[in-house]
Picture 1 (spheres, rainbow, N blue to C red):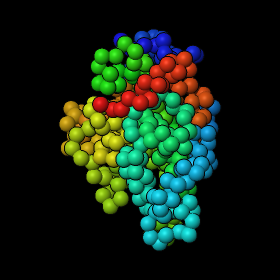
Picture 2: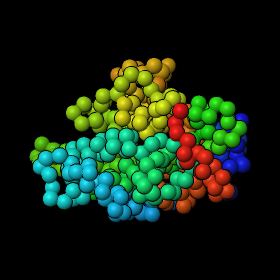
Picture 3: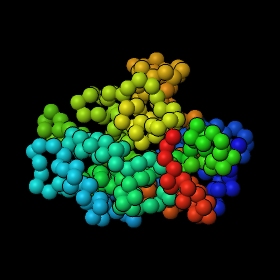
Length: 314
């Protein structure tokens, strides 16, 4: 049993597909399916275009974030005069892989519940949750001229049971996940004209588009289990993370029991069963949290942060 008392006021368990939930026929897969109509944009029909602008959370103009960008350096030769200047897609991918590796090594993984903490403060503390470390990656991307946006997912709290085997009763019944996407232009076509920009999820960016490894990347055997020292953030560099039951994105050497038949068949990295609702795309994580709140209510965050904000992944 997970706790619904920690949830922000006003958010129901099935934000998307409430009708199905009321009739007792809603499943995780149906929640995602019903949300397809809004997954390309926020409710109302507008399609978020993303942005490179700094926000309260993605404060990439802060000196700490700017110092990180300088440390990462220009995205490969020939180096631009300004490391913050827009780069071509291959170099954008390269530098974001370097950024992910840097964050994995320099920002210690903890269970912080303050999803709205500015990136500069995460860097100052030297520790952060998966959500906060993904925000650092987003801020770096925007600093390099890569537009980002997020997809809001309500994830079943049971996904985190392996992390808290003795504290299941206080695990939130649903966790709001801001899953980043990055807009990169495709390499120039045969005529030399750049192809239209495309959006990549953070999983596609870090695994499926690994520089030099081809379309499927270099995923290692085994999917993400949400247990042990490896967190969701670290796992992104070695295996595809799929919230939409698309087996082709999973490593072919995975140990899952899915029924897919393609080259990437297997469900080792298929996490779609944990998705309760798809909240659509938003121009920034600031906008997502402003619309739907954070995972925990304010009082719960105040009580939990001093402890969980320092507790590292086991």
